[in-house]
Length: 301
Image (cartoon, rainbow, N blue to C red; front, side, top):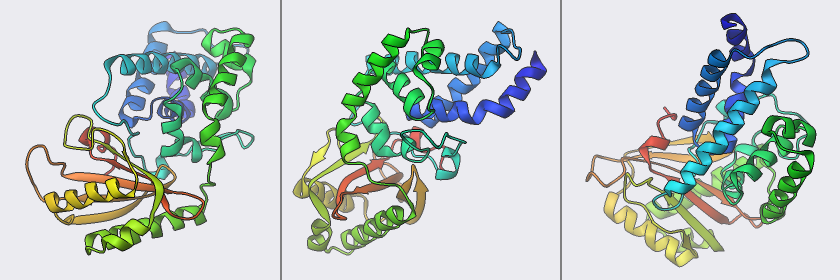
């Protein structure tokens, strides 16, 4: 059995991690639950044959672990806005089915993972398995131990909840990534040089800023709406922390982000921030998201 699990780990660990990350949005939690899935397989010693392959069993265990983790996370609450932990694009890849509703990169984008937060844990599981991994309703029902009818109902409700996201989807290709990177660099250059008017002109009228400190560091405790509030927050942040001592532009979650480090400050002041943007159809910044919680940045070296 140990040899079988070792082979299964080599064959399926990456895909299981892809599932867990899209279910949870936190890389460290995905790491933990993939490991726990194989621990349970080692303890349970499931029967494996050509008629009973191990992969569905592993997917079932991992999905149930994710659903339980989501329930606990919601019961515990979160300090301020929640954002997914940023992950380099290379680590997000897996051999996803070409026929899936949401392709591999989009299904790990910040916008998509935020949209999934509106779903119940069960709806999220069904939608990810159906629309990212392209499983049939029957296959999902077998994994979740649900009837086909219940799977279809959960899927229908999840699709309704994602209608707003679907209506504003922007293709995450190289051209879109380049546009976002150029807009982000232009915005932060204007901001750092004190050209507030130029920076504000790049913000959409309905722009939203989300800042995730995870209770570790000072961050905006509520989403900030509108150009004026966003600019006020960022201007005060520069007054407080100054210009970053180091900046790296990274490709994370299907988009570009600025990985900024700062000189040592007060214990409540974050030493690092990874900030990205989403553009609207006109090319203006519609969403700005900044992760400063150290626990969510450990994977980025």
